[in-house]
Image 1 (tube, rainbow, N blue to C red):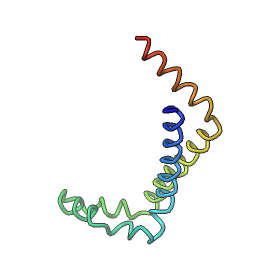
Image 2: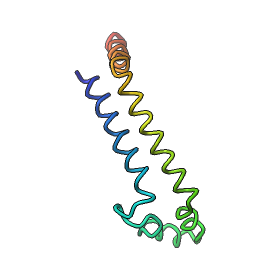
Image 3: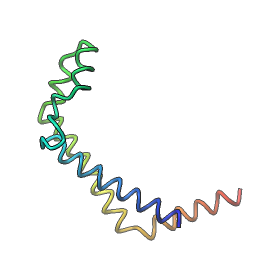
Image 4: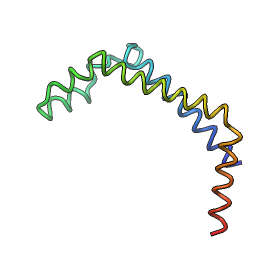
Length: 99
């Protein structure tokens, strides 16, 4: 039972993280991507104003979106191989109990 919940929670985590990483750089729903407080603090504190320009660039936003797509692919792969993942976790747990 614990193994099933572990896989389910992992799938939910990948789905939510994937959607967030896809939408966050482009949408203002989560706030302005290049004008957040932490980014300004790190940029000014380190003396590297290029950090803020780099994060605001479309190349960086595209890379973050790509990570979101990768998370969605992992989630859908796990959905398709749900029984196999649960079986592997149960097998691993049984080996740990025998030791």
